[in-house]
Figure 1: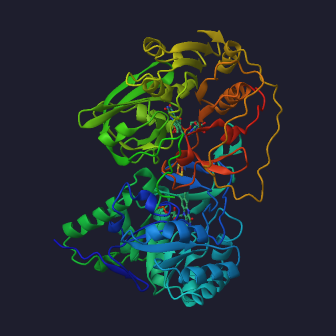
Figure 2 (figure 1 turned 90 degrees about the horizontal axis):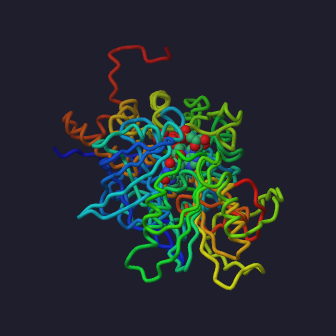
Length: 311
Length: 321
Ligand SMILES: Cc1cc2nc3c(=O)[nH]c(=O)nc-3n(C[C@H](O)[C@H](O)[C@H](O)COP(=O)(O)OP(=O)(O)OC[C@H]3O[C@@H](n4cnc5c(N)ncnc54)[C@H](O)[C@@H]3O)c2cc1C
Ligand SMILES: Cc1cc2nc3c(=O)[nH]c(=O)nc-3n(C[C@H](O)[C@H](O)[C@H](O)COP(=O)(O)O)c2cc1C
Ligand code: FES
């Protein structure tokens, strides 16, 4: 059976709904040895800032039950190096390129947006206002509806490209989603990592040099599905689901909860071919359940009349 | 950032692959070690000593793969076979050790930069504990019959106790001169392997200075793989060119080996460890501070680096190790 997997996210047409999550797929081209990049719906890059950033001191990662705790601190090569050394190759991979970016101030976010708007080969932008591991530039903007709307509006004014705003789970996500939708976002992604921490009792020390970090992986999936479900019902713009997706069935949880597309993150570390396996899983599900158009699965959750408010 | 850069003294990154590999042997050894043999695609046979693989048991737990050095590697028909020598350190390595012949693991590699292939009349290998793992592959390669420049190899091998020493006879059988140290004196020299190394080479390094380097705040800190200039020969060198040192083990040991090599004006290559999630340069989790206050990524810029990259170009004192 031929399944139509295509989907549109805020004006951006994708051949299929599977994207890679920022920070888990490098700048994309590193994976060319492992999978056929052209099969992906799109690649979301590591979060970029105007200038290169060093990130946090090590240790930066530790495994926790079914999860990964990280405090990378947004280390990245900076916009200029990306545009010169990486983008030309990335733009030729035959998939959509979505640049994730952040700034230290509203002005910096706006300047980034303006420069990215002028870059050929960049198909869409993902605005990170939800990183738990840096003081400025991250969650400081994303946890209050007013500041989230202000950053979104400033960025919207400088770019006509599809704008996805990435939300934090550590706030009233529905209120922030409504605020950024009102400020001109074309879509939202749910969610960034959950602020978290782990301690080594043997040494009485935090396991990360940064003391706290962000939790990702299968451990966070139910939180992300619920957030997707809540946000998808609160806004009319499309939602991208992200958090702990390891398989096609995991991805479909988000889709049924209301997501139009999905991002595969931590799974890329457990298997460099994970994103393609998720895609294969979605396609197999569609074939098995005689779903001709993937799009019809979006928000297709059956609750059989059960109340869907908090319980 | 895509493909690794080859430099004259370091091998280029080789073809990589990701797949499920069948286990053809698990042999439990004393001291909490096990040897695992895996049937892998032929692309793994391009591995060089010092490179590693990311390996993960099947199923959902543990979540992340673990970095493990290639202990040996050979081509078998149209495929390849690699050996891993692992010490059970925690849940991830224990889960690997619980697997049986016929089970499958997720694996990708060979990864990172290995020991350089520089010609040297004499090599001194120094291994602490599980740091022995890559040394077997290295010694075997250096002794490869096809090579005209077969060097003399001394292996200084330290462990806590004699039950944690493995393959000593095998090293001797291929012609490696093995010098053993154990913390408890149950075999060989009693004390640290670097103490034995200093004794045998007649090197005295300066006492520790305990100076902590502050990373330069203004420096961006990306690792610059520009080649480090050759060390200035120290006043103490004898006529014969100094050996090339290759070390793998805990950080204090690596530093002490670096100090010995620096005192002799010798090249020293050390294999670093860091927690890793991806092994392929994308998670940025394996960052390691350099002597200059910058950052390198152990999985891509290492794990084997010139010791001056992490310890600077001077002798910093012979602490613990
Ligand atoms: C390039 C490289 C090559 C390696 N080769 C080998 C090898 O050939 N044989 C072998 O037995 N081990 C090797 N190691 C170490 C091995 O990866 C760790 O022992 C393993 O990841 C620990 O996982 P765990 O779940 O068993 O233990 P955990 O419970 O995660 O940790 C146990 C202890 O080890 C420390 N630790 C955790 N991860 C690492 C790490 N990546 N490096 C160093 N310490 C760590 C923890 O802080 C803790 O103290 C290598 C490491 C690297 C980076
Ligand atoms: C190591 C690591 C680095 C990350 N870096 C970024 C980043 O630069 N920008 C961003 O918006 N999200 C970043 N994230 C968050 C992921 O994109 C994703 O939202 C989160 O990990 C949840 O998805 P997962 O459970 O599938 O990984 C990072 C996550 C990890 C694990
Ligand atoms: S382990 Fe992921 S970047 Fe090195």
